[in-house]
Image 1 (spheres, each protein chain N blue to C red):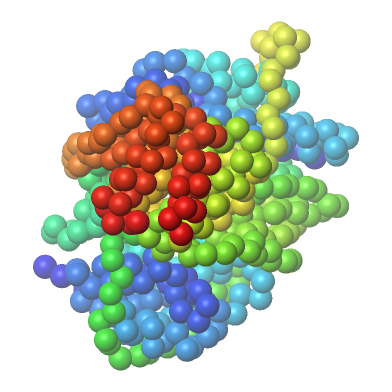
Image 2 (cartoon, rainbow over the protein chains, first blue to last red; image 1 turned 135 degrees about the vertical axis):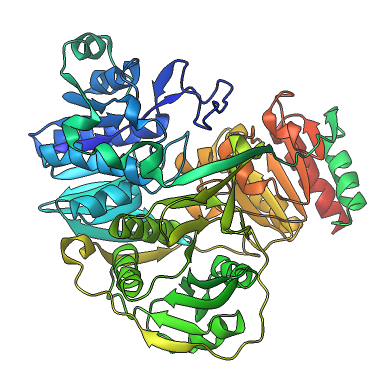
Amino acid sequence: MNIVVCVKQIPDPAAPQSLDASHNLNRSGKLILDEADTYGVEMALQLVDKAGSGEVTVVSMGSAADVAGLRNALAMGAAKAVIVSDDALRGTDALGTAKVLAAVIRRDNPDLVLAATESSDGYTGTTPVQIAELLGLPSITFAKSVTIDGGNVKVERQTESGYDEVTAPLPALVTVTAGVVEPRYASFKGIMAAKSKPLEVLSVADLGLADQTGPAGARQEITDVVVAETRAAGEKYVDEGDGAERIVGFLESIKVL
Amino acid sequence: MALSNIWIVAEPSNGTFTTTSLELLTHARTFGATIAAITWGGDVGRAAVAGDYGATTLYDVGDLAGALPGVPVASAIAALVASGAPDAILIPTSYDGRDIAGRLSARLDRPVLTNVTGLSDNGGLVTEHPIFGGSQTVKAHFTGEGPGIYVIRAKSFAAEPSGGAAANVIAAPAGDVGATGTARIAATHVEERVGPKLEEAAVVVSGGRGLGEAEKYALIEETAKLLHGAAGASRAIVDAGWVPYSHQVGQTGKTVKPTVYIAAGISGATQHMVGMKGSKNIVAINKDPDAPIFQIADFGIVGDVHKVLPALIAALKARA
């Protein structure tokens, strides 16, 4: 069972975020492994463990100037990492990203591809399914549980009103939600081992995708960024045993009571 | 200048379409000369609803035989585009809508704009997207050859019927989708809920991590019931398995715009705020005076939800 997990290194969501002059997210600070991706890495490690053989590979696109996030995935237990890093990739959209990652995944020919439902910085949420289409794979999105049964992947998939049990033959792509498994913390031993694990850096030219990435490939542009209409903070009281009473008073004032 | 031809992916739901689908059909009338809806499930009874909301044609992909909609619906749309492309394809933000958009984008080799909350014709369609928790709005447009694919969030527009005649139903088969279409739904589980639907309730009471443990969610449900409202939740406690996903409010959950939204023990992560900041009134209860939720709350109580909620429940019961 060989599994590829798509991961992204993102600016720390807890730090202030801003756009640069080209309307791209400012990524000049420290990058971390998107927390949403730690669930896919953990899920993959558990599935490979259960299968008794195989390995987990993490693939990514973005600046390789800081690879602490990828090392983190390797420290958790992934066998190797591949990142496509190229100045020509700045401004690449979701489809362009899918083309890049699909080209990398194709070289590995895995049994299963895992990804988060969306990244925590751009949250476009279409890249995994675009990858599946480019690779000719079935896909099951929004998994809250993933098991392998012979040559099939079985998923409990979130729906608007509950969940569906969905199966697909391998190879397949599955996107996982944050409740699917509890990600492990990298052990000291894992962190030390990660330092000598393979981390390959590729360019766009290595993948033969020169015209399909960057702003030109995106075929969309941001024309304006405006400050949204803000809600002003209203009244705020410290509860001194009268909090509930005050809420009732507010609900009366807006005629809900 | 009106755009000539707009297609809407209209998700079937209980003999009609999802509310977001109806919102998109309604909004498309403001800039589209001709509107077509694309649906599946093989129920032609929906032609009247499609027409009532402005579609003159209803393309029906037919019964999906247990397949997830993403692949067959995208395949059917791609086949329709090959014999005459529209100016734009509008798709609701939903689990299946996002699948359809991703599949279609890769099939047509056309980019997709997601999380759209505004769409207007200004010599071409211009989108609006909230970023950084809704504090800023990005405006964008496609630059290449059409059709543009737009994935639009719920409640971005109001749904209003136009009184049009029933749409003309045309079969739009998926064709051969090969290995991509092999995911099958083996069983469906519906989680029971009582009271008004989360997206439609006038009062929504939501709980978050501040509740401390799953059992305390009962406080949220009881408060919601006493206010004739619906109980919601933050992503944190849904992911923790305390409550089903159908309760989730936020970026990846439901968008709500009730008369009053009561956030209890919710700090106000970007992910959550995007789904509820359109509420008419927001009440927040949180023990952290610096919690981001207070920045958008009309009425805030800095206090312990384990004290404030039981007192609120008692006060509401006393009035009943």
